[in-house]
Structures are given as C-alpha cells and as structure tokens.
Amino acid sequence: MKRVLNFYPGPSALPIEVLEEAKEELLDWNNTGMSITEISHRSKEYEQIHNETQELFKELFFIPDNYKVLLLQGGASLQFAMVPLNLIHEGETASYVITGRFAKNAFKSAEKIASVYTGASTEEDGTFYRIPSKNEIKIEKHSAYCHITSNNTIYGTQWKEFPSFEGIPLVVDMSSDIFSRKIDFTPIGLIYAGAQKNLGPAGLTLIIIRNDLIERSKDDLPDILSYKTHASKNSLFNTPPCFAIYIMNKVLKWAKRKGGLDFIEKQNNEKAKLVYGMIDSYPEFFITKVEKKSRSNMNVVFRLPSEDLEKKMLEEAQKEGIIGLKGHRSVGGIRISMYNANGIKEIKTLINFLNYFYRKNA
Image (tube, rainbow, N blue to C red; front, side, top):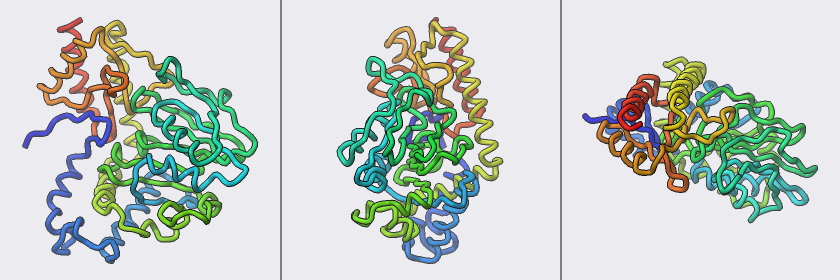
C-alpha cells in the first residue's frame, strides 16, 4: 500500500487508524451483515451511532449543556443563508467581519436576505493578511449577531481569541479550525463548520447552537431551512450523511484515545511553532505577508522568490510523496495545511524537505 503525506486544505487527511477500522467494517458493520452505507437512518443501529456521535462531540469539545449539536448537510455555504434566514428578524440587522474570501461570501449571501452591514474589514489591495482588533468592529444597536470566520484557509490568518459584545451573540464559521483547540463558549450563539478538515469526510456540516437562538429562530421558513425543525427532529428530519457521521464518530474516538482536545491543541501549537520557525529562519526565501499575531495554526501560506521555484518545489515534493502544497488559485504560492491527522512526525518530514529545497535552491 502506498500512502502519501497529504497537506490538502480540505477534504484533508484522516487518521490512518480510522481508515483501517472503516475498511474492516465496510462489508459488515457491528454484526449487522451490512455496511453502514446500507443501513436505514431510522433503524435503532444507526440511531445509536448518531446519538453517540453528538454526545461524544459535546464531551470532547467541551460544549455547554445549553447548546445543541446538529448534524446536517449543505456545507458552510448553506449556512451562509440559513443563519440570516433564521436569526435576523424584522427591524434587525447583523454585523459581518470580513477577514477573507469565505467571510466575504457569507456577507454577500446574507445581504440578499436581510439588511446587514460590514462591522470591520481587513481587506487591503484585494488581500487579507491580518485579524482586526475588537475596537475596529462596529456593532449597531439592533444587531441580531456578529459573524466572524475563525480561520482563513486562503490567507493563513486565525482569530486567537473571539471578540465578545454584550447582548450580541457571536456566530462563527469554524469550518477550517473546528476541533483544533479549546474555545470559550461565553460569547458564542452559533458555530457552523464543515467536517472535512479535522473531523471527517466531506458531506457533514456541524451546527452548535445555543438553545435561546433555536427558540428565536423564525417560524415561517421551509422546514428544511429551519433550525427549529432540525433540533426538534434530532437532525433526522431528512436522511443525514450517515457515512460521514460514522467516520466522525471514529475520528472522535481516535482523538479521545490520543488524549482529547488537550493533546490536539498542544500538538497543533507545536506543529505551528516548527513550521513558522523554519520559514522565519529564511525570510528572504520563504516570503510571507501575514501579520505575526494573526498567523494561523492550520494553514501556513508563503511565496518563494519566483513562480518557477514554486512550481519546482511542488513537483519535487510530489516526487517525495508530499502533496497538497499548492496555494489557492486566487493567490498562488505555497500553502501548508496542518490539520489534526498530520502529527509531529509528518510535519518534521515536511520541514526536512523544505530545508533540503532551500539549501539546493537559495
């Protein structure tokens, strides 16, 4: 079997133990004589793993009791619409903090639905290389929420602490750093995230929503777009992404065996320290514009002195079995996505390659 070092920004690498377990159970899961992909989502066998996954996630992510976990579909892009549809009532507005492309996409979707405004933006010449301070964010009186994007995969920035606004819940798109660190839930009303970075395969969208926001969600929405519907039906209003939930269950158990979120956060901090230490050692070769205090622990982005060198690096990395390092097509360059499944060993292998490439080409 040939395995590569996978640094794709998503869908991204999964723990090998999880893949091996799924492989073993693919034809006969839990002595049912069926694959998990064949079992009815209304069966008691599936319901057990569905409920277990929700409870395990609440336990390991330290989610308070006054929040509900929903297991839905549609990705973050559907949540760009569901959030304002459910939470912005007549006479209200919402603040959107623009720190990258997906934050901007969330705002563009919301402004088609309700009267929203830009609370802050860090865009400069079409790029985003920093996170704003709380003092930069404008909050209007009748704001239903303030929306932020916790991590920006394209530009390599991340909120290290979430801002808090008295009486205004925070809505956070955590698609690219969910379950990578502990967070303070005090200011948070709702979190949404695709699972395909740190928690499983594509197709599953996680919603963590405070109970009072479920209750204040609008009543005049189609059922499929209503948080109230999905909460009251335990995320079983329609057929859930059963296989993705099954894999997430295994990823959570893998994380628990490793030491839970304490282990994961410590490892992610160490991985970031190693990679940023490497590129900071040769700033004339590994060129980054990202503000140091805004640097992401999930996505490290940089350029090389020329596009030819970048192309050469990608080609040589692939020959060494290292893939997924190409920067987003809108910005080019190199991007290292360091999600949970890639540990210290994998990062050190990558750093050895970067050192080799620097010595050969500087």
